[in-house]
Length: 309
Image 1 (cartoon, rainbow, N blue to C red):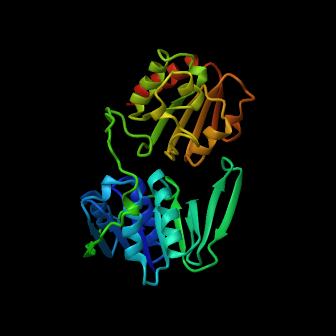
Image 2: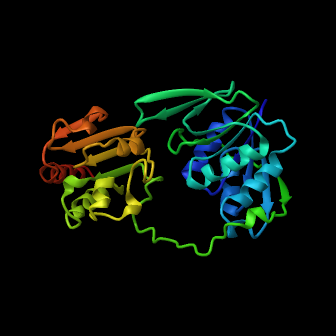
Image 3: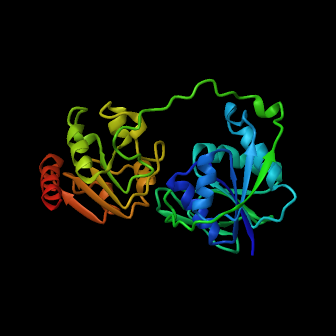
């Protein structure tokens, strides 16, 4: 059975998804730099845990972790190396591929035992199957592509001491700001997301989107048009240039469905679109569509949800 090496940055759902995918391919060896990553590795079935001991690793961007993972990966016959499809994961995977002299893939949604991966591109309008032809696959996994399935284990732990090179210390992290999470779930963790677009009309009117979201216990999202218009903070933007999401239910209210927005939510399990323009592109990918003014439709939805509680 192949051994799959997985970088586990934290104990998020995305980390669970990658470990679940890796488990379907072989025995999982996880690399963790903190307690959260180690906990996720044990929750999702890793048999080996490489625990990196280097207190400075979080003081610099990407390169130290890439060096540490490279030192673990070198000299072993891996069936594949998987990383999160996050900004950090993509920054690490390029460095890792160069160091190991391998090709790499980004944002894969599936990977089989023969190394053939699937990538959904151009807002899901094209599906690409790819394979690294020289050796094993190194890839980042798209968030939401796999259902995270726990498989508790007690991995054998191996402490890894690394010595950072001067090159790894060239980009320092001078400040880290923790944004208040609020009472709503995060976009990448939420099972339900209620998103508003330019059709919401104003920042004040986003209160209706929030009210509906709270009735579901959902996260609030926004299109790029809405955030660029100042209706809602940019950190809640869903799309190719925002956050990629994959909830069980995605409600797009007053969102036309520009290609960059669709690229960020196309893998949602069920998509409901509310728009008064019957020709809006969002309807082409919606499972359920309501042609109407969102200020007429959403209050009815809210009433029905509250009635069923």
